[in-house]
Amino acid sequence: METRTHRFPVGTGAASVEVRNPAGSVTVEAVAEAPEFVVEVEPLDAAAEQLVDEVDLFLSGSRLRVAVPERRPWRTPRFAVRVTVPRGAATRVAVGSADAELRGELGSVELTGASAVGFVEHCSDLQVRSASGDTRIGTVTGRATIATASGDVRVGSIGTGLRVRTASGDVEVGVAGGEVSVGTASGDVGIDRLTGGSVRVKTASGDITLGVVPGLRVWLDLSSVSGRMESGLDADDDAADGGPAQLSLSVRSVSGDQRIRRSAA
Image (cartoon, one colour):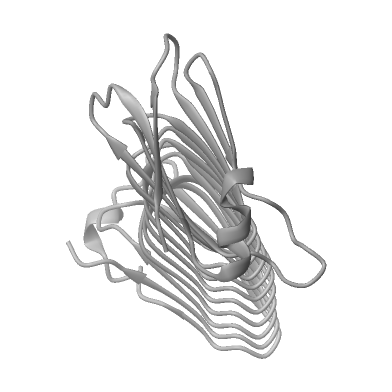
């Protein structure tokens, strides 16, 4: 099926893009010093091919909006939408069952989906709301807020703060600092390297594993009804020089196990 390509000049002011696509896929790629927005719209089925001329493309200054036709009584048209934006552009993507892939260095990102899989490579701040789709995040230099029902959450690096709420999905984080709050019912929680700040983790039946960078003084507040609790922090001589805690850990679980350890140097 034929792909329609549209080009729009980037006006003055901070660039931003909003993309709405119920089904199919959305790809946003940030390119350094891009002089224009490039939008590619590809219909993926017969229903979408009939409606491709109804795709809404609106530009106001440096703000671009792309919205494909909504659900029709007989079926939902499936489109593949690809947008190239300048580096640092604020991005909002709303999808139903469409997968979303956001690449390059973006500004503030807001991603909303139902059963979609979401991937964000790099952004300044992040907000994600999802029902059952998995969420994969590379680097967030600022704060991230993620809410999902049953989807798994994987985050590479968080700068100043993280808040995650999920029911049965697992949560995996590489490096995190600042204020961290993670709550899940039956999902496991793992954070490889905590660099300081305040961390609160709460789960019912999921296991919790937290890694603390070497030499960091830690204040622990652990509680579990029937789960096992293990701490490998006492053997770290580098953190035994007194002084106030550099990291506070508040961990709560019902039947899940808790493991606190030192991360590899």
